[in-house]
Image (cartoon, rainbow, N blue to C red; front, top):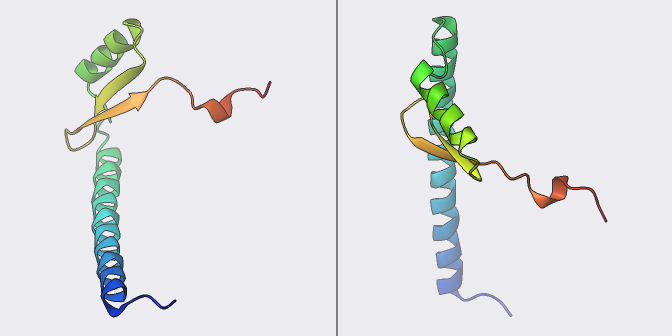
Length: 90
């Protein structure tokens, strides 16, 4: 059974929105990469002393995740629990 014209139109719109999102994401990643390279060229550290001290505090607390600020100051959460596919099979 052929999809209806309305279904085809909806699929085209979904495809367009997904393509637009991917293009925006690629541009964001390009900006982040340029910022990281600029920092490297200028000899700037990726993390401040304060950020490293905070990371140490988070690791010492024994939690299952840590939160770090990215190069733009946005918090990023990282799990400290390895995914199950890294474990040895039974």
